Image (cartoon, rainbow, N blue to C red):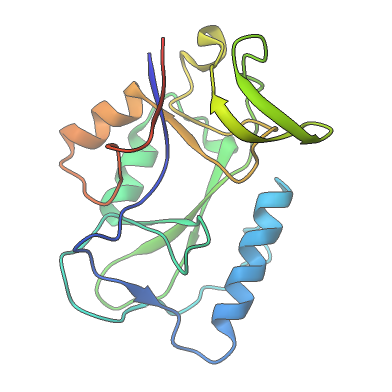
Amino acid sequence: MKVWELNTTDLHFSPFILPEDGKKDFFIQFMEDINDDLTPRKKMWKPLVILKSEQRIDSDFIDLYDTGAIIVNSKGKDLLTSLSLLDEDSYELLPFLNDEDEYYLFNLLRFTDALDKDISVYEEFMPGKISNIELLAFDYNKIAHVPVFKVPELPYSIFITQTFRTYYDEMNLKGLNFEDNLIYVD
C-alpha cells in the first residue's frame, strides 16, 4: 500500500486570502490550536470570507497562508464525503463564505496509532513527538481501511492512502502534490 503526506501544490493555481481585517492572524492561530488538539471546532467556528487574490487555474485543495490547512471546494468535499471508509465522526468540514463556490476547512478529529516504530527511522524530540525523519513505516492492518489519517507522533501531518488517491484521480481533482510526497510503500 502506498501512503503520501497530504500536501497541496501552489503551482499555477489561484491563491486565496481572508480579506477582512485581523482574520489572517485569527486563522493562523486557529490552525495552531487545531493541530495541537483534536477537539471538534464546529460549534465555535464562524465562517470567514475567503477570496481568490489572483485568478489562475482553480484548485480543489487549497493551503491558506502556508499553515498546512486543507481547504476543499465543493468537488473536494464530494471526495471526502464519498470515501465510505471515512467515518463521519472522524472529521468535520467547517464552511467559508465565498460567492463563486463552496469552501470548507477539513479538520481531521482522530489519530490512528499506525506508526510502525520498529521500522521507522526518526528522532524523538519530546515524549511521543518525532522529527528528523529518515523513514516512516505504517502498520498495514491499522490503515488498510482508513484512507485519511493522522498519527499522534506527527499531529501536524495528514496522510492519505492509495484508496484516497484512486478516488482523487477518478474524480479528476486538482491541487494535491503526489510527486514529492510518497513516503511509504508496503
